[in-house]
Image 1: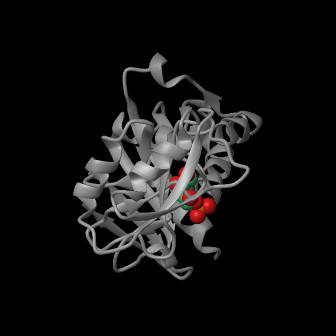
Image 2 (image 1 turned 120 degrees about the horizontal axis):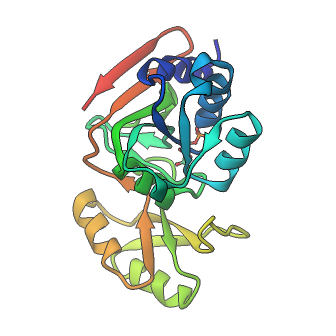
Amino acid sequence: MDKKLMAAKEALNFVSPGNVIGLGTGTTANEFIKLLSKSDLCKSVMGVATSINTENLATNLGIKIVDIDSVDKIDVTIDGADEIDPSGNLLKGGGGALTREKKVALSSRDYVIIVSDEKMVQKIPDHMGIPIEILPFGKKKTIESIENLKFICRLRENFITDNGNFIVDCIPSNEIDMSVANREIKSLNGVVETGLFLNFKKTIIISDGEEVKILKN
Ligand code: 5RP
């Protein structure tokens, strides 16, 4: 079976009737949304979307979408990830939805990540930079201040986030402590959010196409 579909199918077991579900962004999360729309759960659940694309897909498939501020809590969020290290730290934002994804994850009781096995790496960032959402105003100066923390940054071209901001993909030029780097980057004026999702309590569903492995941390 397709790896993403297999992980998405397993994630349905983490949803109960009547749940408010955080709906992630990306191709793997889309597989989950399609399966959810075809299941009996669809009649009773409500979704909080992490992006406009997700909101459009879910709405078109008949899933009721509600605003994050209209619910007290989200029962469970199902989302993908770009890279996961052995400690379960996530790198997200390949699709540019990282700020909404982090807000939804932080508002969720349970957090379930669905990935194909290629997403497991020894160290993050591995094959992409750390996506960082920045304000358009003074973007050059914000990028310079990230570069001063010893990152090589590339502005994502022709891309505007759902929040009207830019994404810079930043590769560390030497060894970094991720928590320190995350804190330092987030303290810079003009930075909205980073794609480093560290220390989230979660379940990770990994599929290799033959079977799924479930990790909890
Ligand atoms: C979007 C994300 C996605 O979760 C991440 O890019 C994974 O996407 P895909 O399932 O298509 O590989 O962080 O901002």
